[in-house]
Length: 290
Image (cartoon, rainbow, N blue to C red):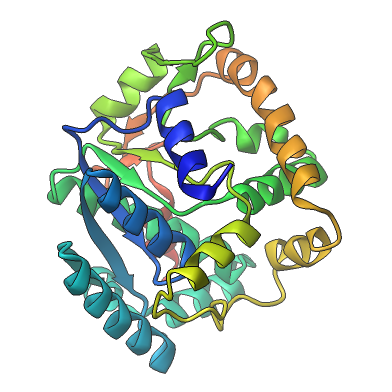
């Protein structure tokens, strides 16, 4: 099955996107998000790009220039959010402070901040769905990392559509089911995130990207080193795509039951009003440490 057919099948099987949806794609500038934006545009969906300028020197500058040109040539609107203007501090300063005061890794901090910004701006753009470029390798890494940490519940929202929806395990092509948690999440202001590349291996995306001659950077984030995810990614290079697929598919069989038995209340952060599992969201907790 070619990659475009696989993505179409995932969208249809999990009812990820409707033709009438306004779709915002979280662009990092890498091959995964670029490929999914390109495909969704060609499939006829109403898409636009949303990119966060992390302000990491020349690396960020080149990404911004390439994504501006790519979206312009594709005829797709692009919004670039300056992280420093949004938060008042650059990501490097924030990560340095959190590492010293809380012992948090850079990737953990960066991920929390980016999810917060993407959700806020997706709402500003009137998005019905927020698409991310997470692929099969990313999801297999998550399963193994959570297992090795001794808490598989960290992956309770792992699925092609995150945000609290459950899927029927009986239907041949499961449809999203409205649950109390998913309703709470909508009321709290979460834009549902969907992952059309959920079952597509990174190797397939790399091949597709090079075949399409996308003018992008293929190197990893210069700050991504010495973290648990980077170590897990390195170890997983020793296993094949078929094994990664089995890891993800087997965990997906557990997700509906895990969600049903571990419903968590969704609140609004008392400080910023964004969705939160507690009274204060992760980003506002970060701000309190700065």
